[in-house]
Amino acid sequence: MDRSSRQPDDAFAADSGDEVPSRAAVRALWWGSAGLVLAVLGTSVLVAGAGRGWRLPVAAALVVVQVCALRWQTRVPVAVLVVNAAAGLAVWALLPAVSLTGALLAAQLTLCVLSATGPRRVSLRALAAMCLPAPLAFGSGGPAGLTAYLLAVGLAWTAGQWRRAQRARARAETLRAVAEERARIAREVHDVVAHTLAVMVVQAAAADDVFTERPDQARQALRSIEDGARSALGELRLLLRAFRPDTGEDGAAVLREPGPSLARLDELADAVRATGMTVHLHRDGGTDGLPAAVDLAAYRIVQEALTNTLRHAAGADEVRVRVTAEGECVRVTVVDNGRTPQGRSASAGAGRGLVGMRERVRLVGGSLRAGPLPAGGFEVAARLPVERAS
Image 1 (cartoon, rainbow, N blue to C red):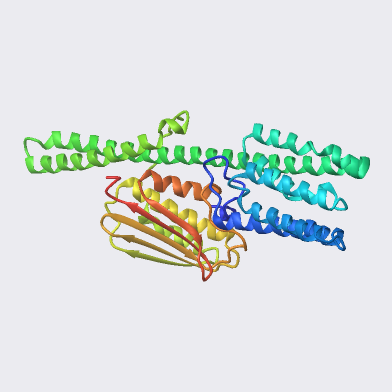
Image 2 (cartoon, rainbow, N blue to C red):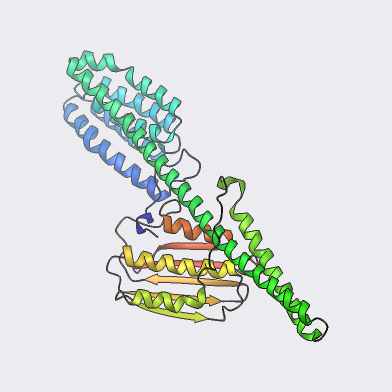
């Protein structure tokens, strides 16, 4: 699992429907945009409005209107663009000493957000509308003023398009990671089912051999076949769920040996200890007899979390792993004491390791929580229900 996936929600993510900007991200974008407008346009208004009587307070009020409107630029960018453009033109009309490019700075910032989040046709219309005041820029600043204005507007729109393309690439990478992880999970479930069916064949043959002479042993073999069949049916349901129509074309599964399980956690912990990391492994309750898919999912979650700690937990020298079997579910918790890079947090859409964890948890109908802890360190906590996989 890549700890680079611990990123805050993107404030430019409101258009696609699959990404929702967090309040913190929207607030950060607003403060950044407002600070830039106040620093650049506010200063220009104060300088140009000195000694201009009533024009200065009116222009300052219009600047405040633009700053306040920026608060909603991720929700209704078109409306905010109209407000900021009108207020900016009014500021320029009151104080012609302020360049048109500077007066429309807030509108340019909103154009960037609209270009990144809105439909392309809408952003192109907004770009064309922002170019309409170009003759005013030429009249007040000549060729240099016109060039500066068109360049600023063009760069704002282009920056938004670059951000849109960046998010599209990230979404495509996430979809590829999900498809690959689903294929890997399906192969593992396939192996488990094949192994179970092979055992059932052997038991059926043994029951047939002793059916007349030792009926008790034959009945015991038949009960084992029944238990194996129930388990295999549960695993087959998970296999079919992994290959829903939205996963794309099915790949051919290759028969392999059954994958690792919670019974081999000690081996996994010893391998991590060999790197110098202190690993505390705790088990509560018995994990024998778990459905194979749940067993595999729990093991892989621990494996991915430990790998994440080794690769990306800055300064981590200790990690605690706890696996608790509670009858109806299995809880897996992995906590390290590393430092999470400032400004980064867990996010559902990025990082192959985290995508793999979520896909495994989804497959068995469980839940996953991953993120930095207030006191430091990073926690991965999964709940895997047993009843849904059996």
